[in-house]
Image (cartoon, rainbow, N blue to C red; front, top):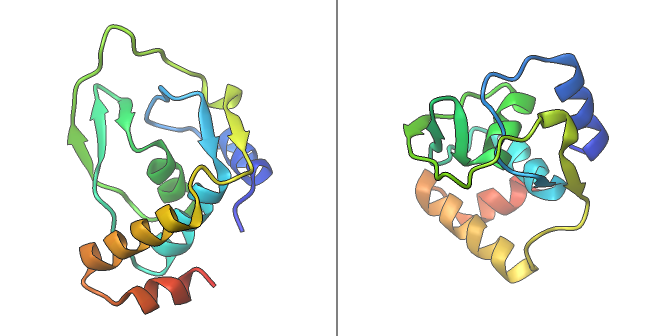
Amino acid sequence: MVTADSIRQYIRNNTIELKCTQRVICTPMVDRFCRKMSAGIRFPNINVFEGYICDGHHRYLASLLSGVAIGINPSRITAATEIIDWRTLTFHEEDYYPQEAIDELNRQDAMFNNISIAEIVEILK
């Protein structure tokens, strides 16, 4: 199981190639992504501009923690984009999403991977 402490330890002990532009990470979300990635579930690419993550921080961290590569799409940033040091992230231990939203994301992941929702649910047990 991925925890805030395990993410912090990874950040302390490893060089992270891409730069962070988000202040808060939802630990349960990273954990779900890790479990799914480790089971072979694919995800949409993350969006990156010149080494700065524009969208996909949770998927990127999960890819690092699970050792599964994630694709990158070129993107753009705005003038308001702020660069955040990975070591200063805040972690939410509570899930961002209610169960209905998690169920919908699981359905989307099942469709994206052309597998049944039951297979996704089994991965997350």
